[in-house]
Length: 273
Image 1 (tube, one colour):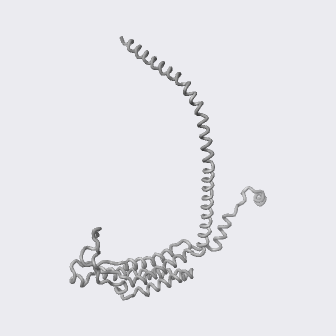
Image 2: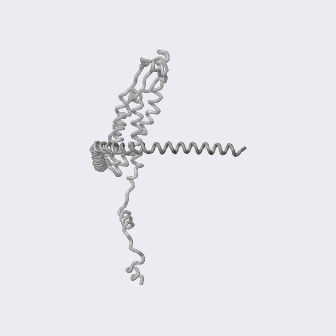
Image 3: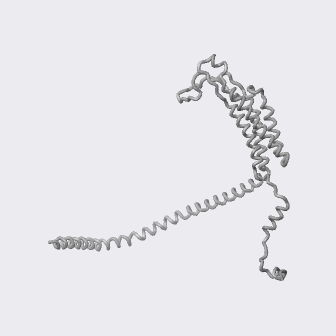
């Protein structure tokens, strides 16, 4: 009883295999004839496509080669330019330019509004639907808060930067130290005098409702200028090119780089004997 269903399944499988085999045998001749007919057409189409694409590919690869050569030439030119610029714009001169620019910015920032009082509304609140900004009154420049004392400090910073550009060694170290001192003094004046005065509403609180003091661009400019002077001076002392190598040290390093003879050479054996 159990073997009968197995025989039926086996016979059904054999019939399916035989039917599929006969179908493949019948389909093979027409497929072979179709392949023989279409193969020349495919080869002709491939040859025609190659003839058309070959000059285009040639132009493409020639363009890539020209682009690569242009990039190599640009890289070599950039390397030569960077080498020439590094001989002119040394780290000492670059730091001197930074200090001089920071001193000039400190002088300019003293004539820019550094604080104001906004009437109505919170200055920290912004809305996209707000078309008109709150009015600002009682504008003051940065120099008015400390009697323009930072104008000569900024001028001194410019002179120190120019001195650092032209001279190195002891004079350069003194100029960098002077820039640090001038920048630190400017930061002290800005944070101890300008900041409290800029955030003080004063008499405007009694005249207008919702008055609030805000710091303008002049405060940020003078703060950045003073920080730049300090940073330039600190970087001059921190840069590794201040480390000097004596002539004896150079000679010793040259001797260490010189190739040594082997210990088992004939001349060493003769001398030891």
